[in-house]
Length: 200
Image (cartoon, rainbow, N blue to C red):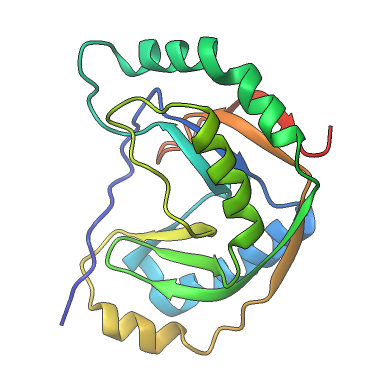
C-alpha cells in the first residue's frame, strides 16, 4: 500500500504561472468540499486557501533551481519576449466552460479534475506552439485540475480514497480570462501581474 507524501508549508518565492481562477460561486462550492475533507481527515491534511484556488494553464517558472540565471531573471526574459504573444494567442479563443467532476487522491495531493480537458488543452497547445518555456520548466500536463488539499501526515492513500469516495463533485464555471500570477506556492502571497482575456 502506498502512503502520502508530506507537503510542508514552506514558502518558495518567484514562481510564475498562467492560471484560471474560479468565480465566487464555484469557489464556495470547492470550499464546501474542502470542509468535508477536513471533517473526514482532520489534521492529516492542510487545505489550499480559498483565495488561491486555481487551475494552472501553464507554469512559466516552477519550484526548482534554474541554471545560469535566477528564477526572477528567467521570468523577466520570458515576459519580455512572450507576454504580448501570450495575450494575443489567448485573445483568439472564446470563453470556455469547464466542469470539475472528479475527486482524485494521489500520494502528493487531493485534486478536483475535469473529465473533458479539450477546450483548455487547445489554448494550452497554442501557447506552447507560440512561446518557449525556460529549459527547466516542465511541460504542462494535459489535464484540468484544482489542487484542494495536501498532506501534513503520512497516511495510506487507499484509506483516503475509501473515506472520500462518497463526496459528490459537480462544479461548472466559465473561464473568461487567465491570470499571470506570482507566488501561488504554499505560503500564499499571490500577486496578479497580467490578465489575458479570452475573445478580447
